[in-house]
Amino acid sequence: MKKLLLGDEAIALGALNAGLSGVYAYPGTPSTEITEFIQKDGGAAAAKVHSRWCTNEKTAMEAALGMSYAGKRALVCMKHVGMNVCADAFVNSAITGVNGGLVVVAADDPSMHSSQNEQDSRFYAGFAMTPLFEPSTQQEAYDMVQEAFDFSEKIKLPVVIRMVTRLAHSRAAVETEVERRDQNAVNLPEGRSWVLLPAIARRNYLTLIDKQKDILKYNESSSAIECQSGVRKSALGVIACGIAYNYVKESGVDVPILKINRYPISESAVKSLADRCSRIVVVEDGQPVVEQEIRGMLGAGYRIEGRLTGILPRTGELDPDNVAAALGAAGCQNLTSSELPVAPRPPQLCPGCGHRDVYAALNKVASEYPEARIFGDIGCYTLGALPPFSAIASCVDMGASITMAKGASDAGVYPAIAVIGDSTFTHSGMTGLLDAVNENADITVILSDNLTTAMTGGQDSAGTSKFEAICRGLGVSEEHVRVVVPLPANMDNITSVIREEIEYHGVSVIIPRRECMQTLKRHKK
Image (cartoon, rainbow, N blue to C red; front, side, top):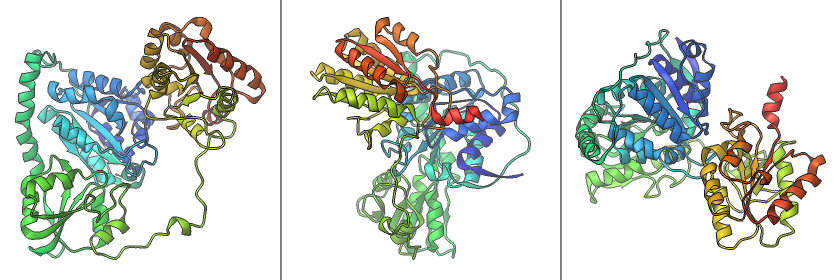
């Protein structure tokens, strides 16, 4: 049966058809649609496949590892920066090993369409010494996730699948099975290999190292050099990774091509290509992971080009044009930004958004304090950095607003104000607030609650209806946990509350609460 699917949807359907028992995730572009597809699937609901959103990526990874411990198949989904959050659990899952199949989908975002960096998740798989699959098409995404579950159970390790924005959010026809595999039965492991006491961890680590030869053997069986004309020798050879393989094929070059979609890469395949060619161009979307690695394989005397040498752009997404130019082929000429018929328009907060009223009030009060600094966080409200508000001084990572405000206050900045959203607060902000309470830091926290995880499309927020209790439980004085309704008609009240809490020299939390305009529209329908 053929279906028209996003790359994310192909991953989700492939996992369901592979006998999935649970998906664990925190919403983050470009990975969000994987979990949403499973949540909306009638068969998954009937089979009681777990699909609730997690508080953050670390809790997601740990819960999935628990399901794997019980012998069932689990999927973990996140964007690339989520790998930083779950790294402790992820790296150690390679030391414990897995029982039921465990697949970790890391969706990278070259060009930073909605991210703070361009980090490449292939580094994480190499660091943890786990296998990584990188599909180049939606069909491969569908097929590979099923292969990944099988291989995970065979090798007893988690398997990472690396997606990129362009593949995750584009559609193609995918040939799918009609029948779904039954879920695994509960099958608990014997022994103490999951208890990472040093003596056990050292033994497990040796086992992990020993498995590397089996992973390489498996990957070598899938590595083949293509050449349309069958020519054995060529001045130019190409190594194409993941989605970049499509761009190489579109260029029409008739040279030997080694397609890489499983890691660690096959050294014998790379050397076989080098024997045919005097020069290799490495085409990979993301950081120059393979380009750096094959320099070590082939030595300094071999000519290797790619992102590091400047033949391809060092940053951002690749596309058919810059790949064709690097390979000496004719590509289509895209319009430059100055030739586009429509002027670029920066993103803005939605009309009527409660965050607008929060920033209007904050700016009004902050203007009364010459040294005031407002530290921002990850969410829709990050747009408060742009005109017309130009309010926030920083936005670094999930939860950093509170701890940066505390650090600035420790350094003598007054007033130090943090702005954080409801979902980000439960994701990573609560621990920072506890630090601030433990030192009675002189900070004011604006916990802007729009009752949803708005930036990624309106998913459930883990702390909804619990924030006052959470803040009191962490030690914030009850009289300094204040709730306001962010509306223009309430501006006098909001500014008065902000001013009062700034003048209080301790930890205070102000909760402006009003539903996101987008979810409100959906609820009204």
